[in-house]
Length: 350
Image (tube, rainbow, N blue to C red; front, side):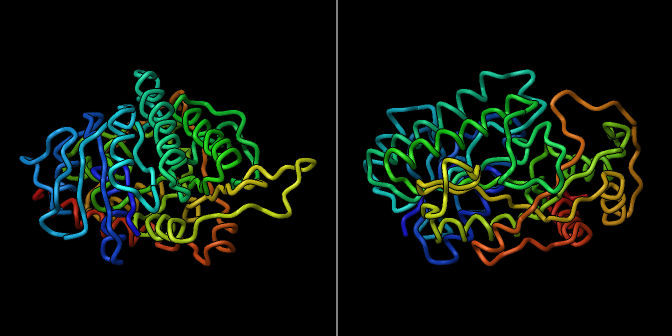
């Protein structure tokens, strides 16, 4: 297939594009390359996929030097005319939207960036699919949509009406918008709620990277809620396997769906929501110990109260993914962090 993958200078998008290319698909990658975190890491990912930093120019489609079937364009999703023109010219068979303004805490400081990229940008994707005959759309949601829900493990059939960050609210809005377009225009829309993704080339604003960096730099990490947090840490390879399966197996309408007892995870329209997590929640202090073991160093810690917008625990029920896609994430954090620390040492020369 010819597939548009947005966010390919980002963590999950980079890996997804490479996986699809290795499977023989044609990929067009798109990313705004914003400066939310270190752009050197983003350009490093692009270089790994054969896109030279010096060649990147806004709006210009670049040919990869590594993959004959990969091209990349720097573009903002909220740039309506450019997005429409790209769809009209390329005639995609499928779209996987992994681009977003990420981060819970940053949404407290810069809320408009989230509406621009995550709401306006996603609307442009939906409209471009609608007007260019693309009926296979998958997209990244987030475990953050569960908000104040305390029922564990989190199920895609649970209500997500109480988000506690604007980031989470924009991700829930993506799910609602996707359902509308599935219902009105028959676009097959599958959303994936990611649970704390980590691994080589990971995001430097997330705990696994911050902890790894602190181990080698001697920095002090802030341990929120005095360490009484749990996360469903999910290794990048497990995430990408799920993403690719969803792209290749687009959802269909649920024939048994009833408006009298509505299942939030499916619909009478071609719409589906999956959790994708390791389904093995890990105490924060145990995860820090896994980082220390992989790095062979102890990390300095400052214990802090919980941050606004944070949730105490995440834990994914992935049974729907297992039933629908025949797949269940499985990489343990000890092995995942061993691989991440090995990459960190090589990339940063420590």
